[in-house]
Image 1 (cartoon, rainbow, N blue to C red):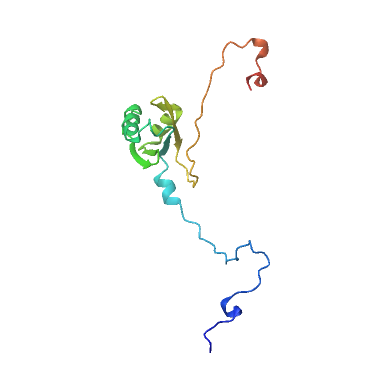
Image 2 (image 1 turned 60 degrees about the horizontal axis):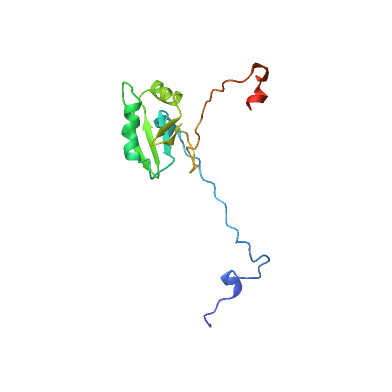
Length: 147
């Protein structure tokens, strides 16, 4: 024996498309049971700063804890990379905070959203605004004009 293996033994042969990776067997991952996470984080807000050089999370957590007065203060945690969270004892306290959005700190917006089960690296990313339009002549009052 020469110590050499045939191309079949090595799994080599002519490739029809040299840019296509070899196919691998597919596996099915079992979906996790998220019931516990949904319950644990049901009264949690996730927040993101818009300017990490100016808005320091270590100063934002006590600022918002003081701003959001309630019987039981929310517990804030730094999640890193400009993200932080607050866990509330009562649903009513969380809803009261969400009702008063948007928030800002150091002249920059802070994104505040209710926690949801997501894998997006951009979450949270919404800053809802409401505006009041004044001094529109009555003959122009229509949805089309506002849009």
